Length: 189
Image 1 (cartoon, rainbow, N blue to C red):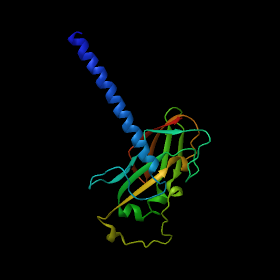
Image 2 (image 1 turned 45 degrees about the horizontal axis):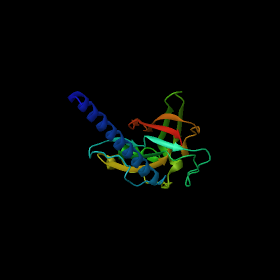
Image 3 (image 1 turned 90 degrees about the horizontal axis):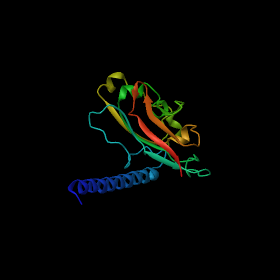
């Protein structure tokens, strides 16, 4: 075997090993997302990491969600579990002049092929009850104060996405804050 052929063979074996490793990492990540409870507002293994000075919203999703006709998510009744796990760190003044993050934030998903968008308020999937009469602090009490919160939502429980293979770009909006954009493929088993 020539030296070039040996190098090429080594490259092919290394590439195959890498793709198997990446595939296994992806499926284990999918398993982590399947363990997350929709509506639980606590951090988990799928919660994105942020720096201490971060201000905004950050989300994490699985790359692929598999589904089958007739399957139902036990908790939400949706045809599959497309978890959107997130964290926000926002100025308290931005949160307190609204009804709170969960009641104000929107989840947006856009079909990458058709460009059809779906939008819903995130509160519908939250287990945490908002205080119906929260005390409104004085503006000076809120100066320099930041609040961090978490969310874990099943996008398919909130958005009327059709039961078909598709690729969606997903993000969260709260006032003028927009999260990072995640791409999720819905794929029939």
